[in-house]
Length: 420
Image 1: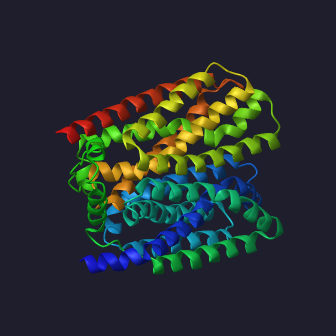
Image 2: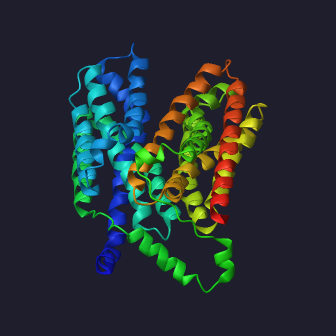
Image 3: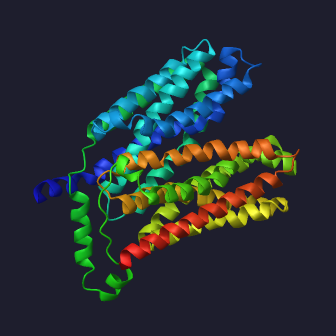
């Protein structure tokens, strides 16, 4: 058994880099703001902008819900098969967009194709990352989430330039790149040997056994591995789900609405608002890497409480309608904490329910992003009063407070189990 561990150990950086490449490719999903107008022009849908925009909502739902809805089927697939299947759907989705002539085709190729493709690839890689590098699960998942969320900063100008020259060529080329890279990465990946995570943890525990104080500060928890069905039958799952979903809501609201918020509330230009949107994307990426790394150095549940607490403060301040500088700072901190969830959900899910089934369990937890994506943007749109978003901020503050209470409860239960 240890021989297979040694062989995997020699190549795990290669596997991790392939997983990063997968996340970079599927990060194309964050380029919707670039492709929406070309879609409208292509379909002559100037009078159906709301319907075209709905396509993105359906895409997000497909990506976040497909791991759960298809869980029974995907459980039978290896990591390699998941990425190849997801890559085919994702790449063919973009190629199909080059041929669209009506709205149903747009929803079929973009929403279903790229959405389900993302849902098969990204959650799989997040769970895989924590298993490949169990000695640094926070950094591994944080960097993975950061690449996924931040790749749009590269894809946006590239795709915009291609679309400006030729719509059909842009989507055909993009789709072919996605197909080739994702299938190639799928062929490189190898499954994590059973028992490898526990093996690495025992190594880490052995190295630190000489330090009695370290042992005292970090009591060992023996958590039975639970699969998806067993996980959702525990009370801990629902408490953690509330912490994640409501904690993400404020960030989803700001990330999706920062441009209209800044224009309506502070009268900034469209160009300036786009600059603030780019700033928020950067903060999201930095937050995923920063907080993921922090979880490896400190108590991950303290980190969870901190990133849940930040939007309680920032949303509360924004509800008072502060000046523009204070608003930008509050929004940036909100997105920094939002990114933190991307870097901490994986290690926390593995710690709560075991590492053996982390890929399928993360797929269920990933649904919390979809729930927050439904609540956050709708909250801002439905509760604004002209340029005044104070009521939306206030409700977001309350939801963040509920998230913090749930996070504290999770930490309390984990501490009780550790001391017991």
